Length: 261
Image (tube, rainbow, N blue to C red; front, side):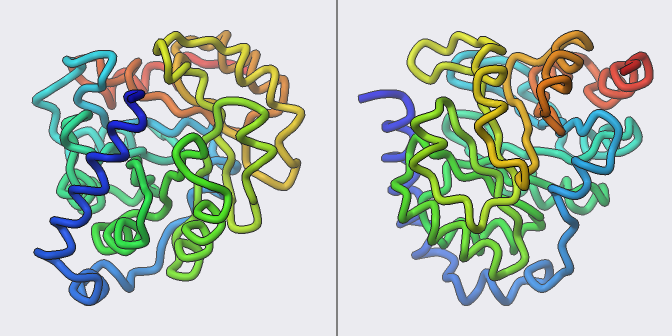
């Protein structure tokens, strides 16, 4: 079983348990559920560099990134740095995150927040809204086309935007984009965790022009952003590069201030 398949299987078990503890009705009654959301896609387009800075404690390929990081503190630092949006890992088993991290980030900043999670059930979409997200991640590699369509439509119906993540042209071609605002190209190979910007460079021209385009993983230099910007990318998801620093916010601020297109 691949790591992605294992994560999804574990996720489904976790969702079943969560539903026994907190119902969808209880989620929709939470204070943040009816808040007016920020536009994730517009903020990427309207912010210089369009950086989506990530909060990530660890990952399957790197078990120690910044295990003791505080989501609220990181969120404040990112907002001060001038990033476009923030991505919050909420998967605990593999990434050391939680929905509480999303809630804490929401309380600390006014950035659009992306819930970065392996979403396979509408329950997680209601959960994202209840804990303060403005957008959700859908991963084409672990969802059938009809699931992408129905999950994205549900997200839009409650005010959340959708980032669809792809790894190759086959995933892009099979995915319905009717309710997708942002298409992200993940440069990381899920089989061996290798990273290549060529993935984004080869797919840029195939993403519909009406979608906001972002490149994800392996972006750590000004040159990489310049190269990707030149082929049409609007934004760049960066997490590890900032999270490896003592102060992720200060690292992001330095990166942005020293950049010149």
